[in-house]
Every structure is written in structure tokens, then in C-alpha cells.
Image (cartoon, rainbow, N blue to C red; front, top):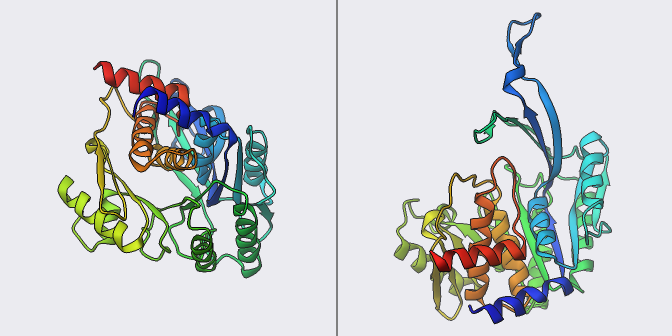
Length: 343
């Protein structure tokens, strides 16, 4: 992709409307100063003194954050939070984001707010060290009435969208936003609006998803195909091609240091190598940045190979942001591409 194409595609982002459907959580970072460690008089256990708390949307919210960083014009989250303190923080964080429209987001007393609480030890001159995470999740099925509200919001907003992203983050099926009912609605939507890019990503795999654009990592592709996880690059290309032809939709696969692969229903397969490392890395959020950049690029007029190149460069930017769930702007992606071309 030359610079003219890069500028043409990314200049379209400000005109896009993208719907992000899925499990929005609150990423709450507790910044710990190790020089202030003490021992509890009552228990005799070490005390970690928190000197700063920062919060941001996580999970599906990380995709949203990346779309904002890219300058996408309007972003419509379809998800939910609880009437609790974490829900207040999440709603306030979403509301404050440029271009985010909350008319598809539901606050409900039937769910608690999905939260990742991340204690982070910050020592001068050293990379951040994350301690054991404290998670708050819902373990019961999503109420039927709430499911109906969410799928209706999706279908309404998708009518005027240039792309839809599905992000399934929960460990237990039917306890999050992406339920069987919602997937049935997505199947109907994909059949009715075949030109609308619908990208799906799920931490539990995409085996039960309707045929939309799949984004997965190499291990998820192996599991989906009934293979062992140690796939070589040729295996990934072959399986991605087979899956794309089966679904009649594109398939994108991230392969860590081996780069990224895309396959089209026509049988074409593309591969871009990972950009060189520039120091310590933190892979948290890299996959979500890939998803966001694929959605924006495809909605902005990129072909599969161009979308792959943009997402690959974005992932390189994000993994070099330590101690946070990072994002990549168009300028940062441009610079990463220039740096890689010079190396």
C-alpha cells in the first residue's frame, strides 16, 4: 500500500459510523508505589498502597477506544452496565469520549458492571508489573428482556452503519451481550445487508457464530479447525483459506511474531510480517486494536490486504505501550510504517 492509498483510506474515517456490540467492561488500574509498602498490624500481611486510580472502558471498550484514536466520526456501543459504582464510572468514561453515542447502551439493575481491576506496581526506571487481577463478572444468564433490548438496538443502529463489530468477552456462554438470540439476529442482518462489514471476535472461539468476517488468533483457528495449536505458517494459510471459502467471508488471523494472515472466499491468501520490535512490549489490547483497525479500514474502502497492513502496523504501536491497554492513532500508524520501511 502506497502513501496515497494510506491517506485516502484513513481520510474517510471521520465520515464513518461504526457499531460496536459486545461486553463492555471497566478497566480499573490501581497504581501501587512499592516504596510505600507496609505490613498490616491486624493480619501481618503486606499492604500495597495505591497512589493513583485510573479507569477506562475495556474489553469491547478497547475496540471503541481504538476507533476513537483513529478519528472515526460516530461510534455506537451496544452493551450494558449495572447501576453500581463501576457502572457510573464506565458510563461517565464512555460519555466523555469524542464521537461516542450512547443511545444503544443500556444501564440495568439486572446486571453488575463487568470489571477488570488491575493492581499495577510502578517502580522508577522499570516496566510496570501487574499483580493478580480482580475480576467482577456476571455468572447467570442474561435476562431475556435485556437480550431483546440489545438485539433491537443493534438492528436499529446497523441500518445506518458502515461497519459492525461483535466482541464476545465472557467465559460462560449466554451470560454476556453476545447471546444465541443476538447471533441469530446477526445472521439475519448479514444475509440482508451482505455488503456491510461485520467483524466477529470471541475469547471462546467463533465456532457457533454465523458466517461473518472472522478475526482470530492462530490458536483459535487451530481449535476451530480441530487441529493442534502448534500450526506453522503454511497450516495457518491453508486453514484460513478453507474457513473463508466455507463461510463465503474473509478471515483474518493474528500470528504474534509471525505477523498476520488474511484469506478471501476467492481463495486468495495474504500475509504481512510483524514489524520489528523497538524495546519491551506489552501485548494487552493488541488483538482489539487489530479488530478496530480492520473494521475502520474495510469501512473506509480498503481491500483485504490494505486492511491487514494497517491493522498490523497498529498492533506494533500498541504492544510498545506498557502498563496500559493501548491505542494507535493514524499518525502513530503512519510513523510505524515509515520506521519499518527505513529499518
